[in-house]
Image 1 (tube, rainbow, N blue to C red):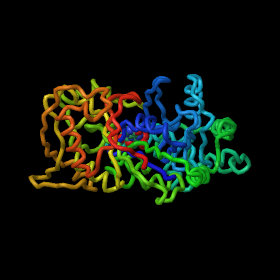
Image 2 (image 1 turned 45 degrees about the vertical axis):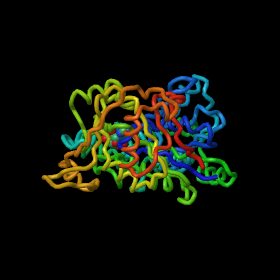
Image 3 (image 1 turned 90 degrees about the vertical axis):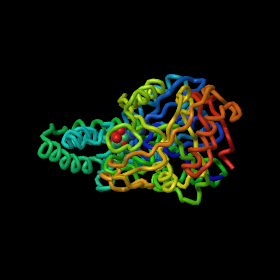
Image 4 (image 1 turned 180 degrees about the vertical axis):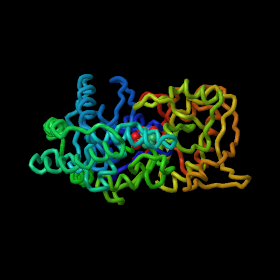
Length: 428
Ligand code: IMP
């Protein structure tokens, strides 16, 4: 059976956790391929509310493998705590595995994340402070420590010794910070080795075996396409590849194995951290959406920036990912608005621009061209059938489909698993 991907179509926080939990009842494995504990996926079902950062969002289904692929960066402390927390709430975590090729977020990565942000001053990215960027820098700089390395003590000690020397020079001489003690870092590695050993394996082989046994694999995106290191609003991006290409490199999966690519879009836009966001609004309507939707980061608690749905960015996202279907989330948040807006184009110095520009300065100068649509008189909250949607809400859904160029297969009308409209089958 093939693999299906669930990808953030915007700046992350589109509600992928809920979508994965909803779909995971019909798959055999859920696989994270990128990012780390900068992600915050909220899952609400009959077992409770779970805020997951590293553990794949299918974990509440006992027969489903949870796989953390090689493209993920892993902070073992966070993972161990998360597993303990959900385990204590009765969730079976015995089907979790981690790629031995996944890179470890080391203590100096977290320290450097903070120091680098401070040094950027006004140009700070607004990172989550979890050491994500520095860990990916070491991966491409070929000085990373991988989960598999933790399990080879003889080889690990000289590696960590050498890398820490370099990192301490950076921390103290460039940033004026405090050096980390080698003994402390090695002691952490000792503990992590014990904790990670039962989970570490060749996940690329496991994924391949599952596919060849006709098992269904669900690829869980973290963050969103507009935060992609290559395709996002650089440099205000994360350091991994949340878009579809990242699923191949982040798992060792060939592209032919992927049959469906679901793009998850919120019915409006949000963004955490710095960087341009052309359809951003800062008026009372933004506040109303933020409060009603509780748009505060799961990982950092920061207030999310709010904007109307950005059709230009969404179309670009479709171009990068080749979505075969859309999941539209949080439609219910727009209930009660007299009218809603969608951004259908940009304007720069009086000229119309209908594409998402690569140049960050240009993107920052883009003014949104909004189209206003009438609100709907009946709530969509908790609807489970398309026929329950008021006419104007349906027109809004169709407008988004037209802007993205792809049909909505699922519409989410509330946080829990049950509050979902399955418009058409995802798995074909
Ligand atoms: P980093 O991934 O912590 O390096 O942060 C880089 C940028 O990505 C910052 O603007 C973060 O706010 C943003 N970011 C990282 N992870 C998420 C996420 O899961 N949701 C939304 N924004 C994120």
